[in-house]
Image 1: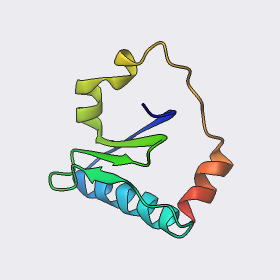
Image 2: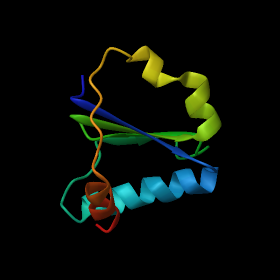
Image 3: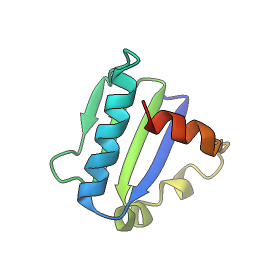
Image 4: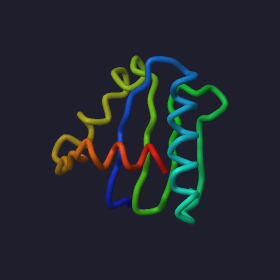
Length: 91
């Protein structure tokens, strides 16, 4: 089981792929590679497995449909400060 789930939404399949690529590029620059990546083919829900951290990138409607927040409702939520999000996006 992972220590953290990261959930994010995108407005289009193209944006799902762009977010996926940005995460991969940023972490690859730090020598971190995913154990697996699932869902790139349809780009509705991409799952990136980094062992202790699982990243879910959803097209907005798909995130609302599956509602993982409800399934993991008792889990502690950790918000990333905006400065950290911006630093991650710059690689």
